[in-house]
Image 1: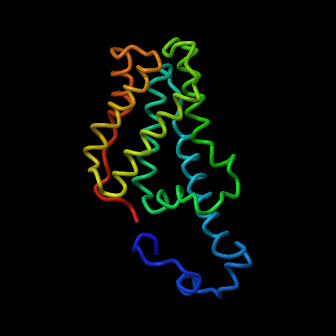
Image 2: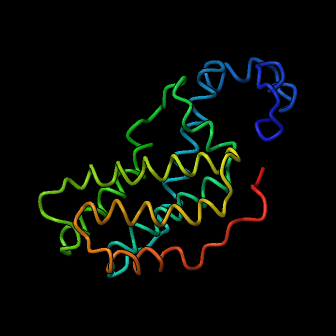
Length: 192
């Protein structure tokens, strides 16, 4: 229903699922609970996808690879991705939804320990800037406002800018980020 841009109401959902409207109340406590569960599921899936990115000896490449995985998740699940960030509905487990940010913070800490980021930078700040910039561009691509080619062009440059602002040398950041993006190919069309 999300993919077809149909209104998701209690009745339409129940009809599509072949259950009574009472099932939504039984399992989710109503429509707000259902939307909360859908949002939570999106963050769980994103966290699972990011967890598949294995660290390398190059912490900047690892951070960039987390960004690539984020983009891949969003483009493969555009409708779920949109719902994930609908803050009108609370998350059942906000800490569980923060897994992605925590992985970015840990990646920034690794870069700092490796001497790629300066000691005075706060890894959480770097992670938040990286996530916010990547999320913005990814959201524009998911919505069709910018092309996936634009995303492929600008996401690495934005990452390099954030990483160099945190202390990495541009001549080091560029090949690290390029290596993470090297094998990415935009899907021919977003999945429904």
